[in-house]
Length: 247
Length: 236
Image (tube, rainbow over all chains, first blue to last red; front, side):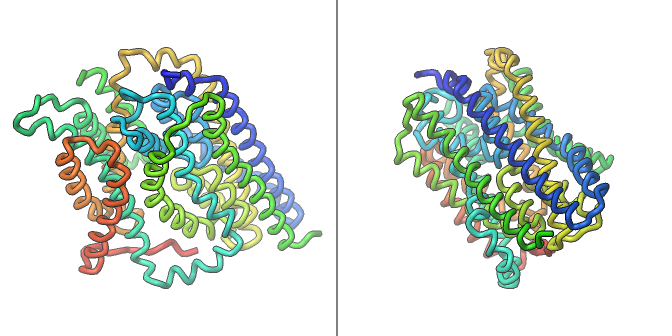
């Protein structure tokens, strides 16, 4: 099993994806029915309940589309079905790509889909993508009935520092990945190198500039709908540039 | 009529049962794939890689649970943490529905509307992604065309450029986030350059290391008053 895409695009994973899909539909329907019944039973206006369903569904269509775009972007790298499962249950495109890349690098190869990315390394990506993301769910399952009372206590104790600490942790993670890409190109500019900076840094810059541009559009012209799409559009633009301009 | 308390209890039960099934799926998919194709990555490397991510993601998960569960109530919370997409999708949907139904969190009506909103939103996303996969399957040969290879080889730089701008330009944590990112970024770049330009397998040490250093820098700036927080965790 040398080509990991044979595993990634196997009918086995497609069936797994189908099972997860059906489970999610069932789960949502059960919750919806339970809450609906309780609402009717306790005398809430049916129009109010219907209104909430309709509003939530309509609102959710547009912000779901970027998830689809990131799925298309991930498919040639990780296959279709595993990203489908991951993005349907908890996941998000940035997390999945970070975790998949850590899965590759911790096996000692250069990165996702690159030289030496075998089926075993794809499996390592799968494990890290799966086990890294479950903790919110685990905490909820174990502690939801107790957690809600304790929040007020945690809030009063240096509540301002907590969000800074969490942001700093994420900044650390972001820095490692950015630093890896930037350094990979910069070392080529050092004396004695071949001077071929590769595509990494230029693609990174194009993506960043696109995001800035969308940020200006959103602010200047109040194009709020663009907010949800800016990240995936910037990704697609930078990836297209890698093919069209830089290659 | 059953009491509200018995409704909440049965919601806890439903949430736990379906949550555990979701966990079984999450872990079962990689486990069964390894078993079916007889591929087993070396455990030591796997643990090292996973450990480095958990240092970051367990605290993030904890904060997310603390921030969003009071808003989402019991039923909403169980669904939120199975279906994900909190900040971009579920939370805005839930806030919008609760506002337009004129109900508050931590009341019976709020609990019901929030569960309905999260469930309806998650159904929509699940169906859209499912339809997308059906459309995507016939497109696979096109996407795997060698001309497009440079695009997908550079998926990470394409993600991180935009993500860095979005995250550093944001102040959703209550302060200008770029302030905590500058020092770690410079440091990470220098360290990786010193390593010859590729973090490679040392990424497992770099992630927690840089995470810790960023916290130290941030603590220093916070104490000096260089980081000002507008608001702490949202009021519930």
